[in-house]
Length: 565
Image 1 (cartoon, rainbow, N blue to C red):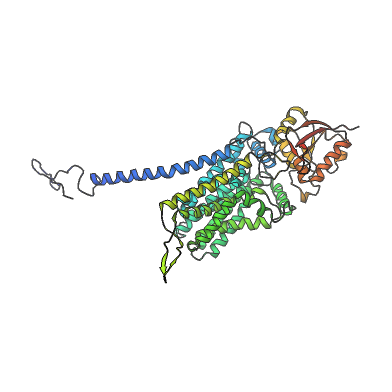
Image 2 (image 1 turned 60 degrees about the horizontal axis):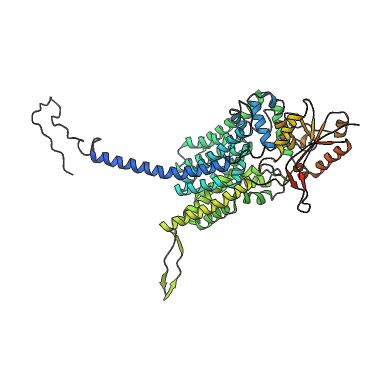
């Protein structure tokens, strides 16, 4: 490149200054150099083009995630847990009607209900409460993209986000007003911070503090998030390539404890310390509600067998690439799986925090397909040796990888859509969706049951739904008289016969869900109806077969008015 020509004709230089006028654009290498400006402009254009190419697929994935989580969001009313959490949030928002039925301090911390209460200032409604939970689910998809991209690159990030966006387990749970959605979002953010800490060579304390804070927020969403700390502990102990400084561990533990301490401090200042102790005692002494193999049966179907196969295939086929990344994800998954498998009390959404790392492992495997191409065969001893598969970039294999990922996602999306639109069958798995017929029965109670009247239902789950929609007090027949075996929020009915004879209850509620899960109490309600001359005053419009052997349809809710002769 030729140097610009400077002329001094007709100029007078001041002492100590350069008399040469600058050429347009200045010397090479200066800020005004046209060549450098063109280069910077080209770089900016390429960066903008690359950002646009990256943003469009991610935006499409997030739109798909939002569609599945908001589609027909209020087609079915709340289940028991949704009614409790929404009612608690409405109590925090100052709703006087809810405050008499749903106390603020119950069995779990109040981060989620506190967040939800900000959106219920104008009153509780199904759509607003579920929309908040669904938005949290979409944010978790975005966090999963960031996590997978940080670990394995952009293609793996998009694949992982796509799988989580359509995964039936995550879709079904985040469409409900449950604590597990916010807990999973905070836990995924914590996992991302741990990854950044490890990648910094354990020198960036800020990322570890961020992980501790996010895990604290997850614990304030639902206390079972503390189990994930065990997974991190095992990872740092077993990993040979990753070391945590003792000072960092102490500081991070202190931050975690400080954040988690907000809940017991709040209950203590509010004068509800005894309430928290009663709930802890009840949680520790609860009877088993499912067999040990519950998750082995339900979760693989909800996560998707294709997701599990892809994740497992990636661990096997890419075993030469296995390092601390896979160890961290596996420890994160193993901790809650082992704990809740052994823990007697099991719930369908309890393992939701494993969904993002499973999607990341599956996305890793699907993105690696873009580099998988056959190695040409070679002649050895006069024979053509069959080529093996090896990782090598290729356009055709990239297109094939995209098709495989889309096929897996389509199968998951179809399963999600099927679960969303499934017709009621008379049975109900807690945490798997709304309670069909409950909202309609509750609204009938609100409109037709006189103020001050008392209802007796078979189980507390039905009672919670009727109380939320009906605004009337509903007791439950199945609540144990032993305080060690009952939720402290519920009041037992020691002698239902005497209560009915004394006129304490004017209505009895039978529902097919409790009758299917606890036949004894369903039959007990029918006996009380017959004994006290109950008259059916409300029958739900939904009807389902009682069993495969008896296809005769039966209503899911029947409300009886009783008379004492």
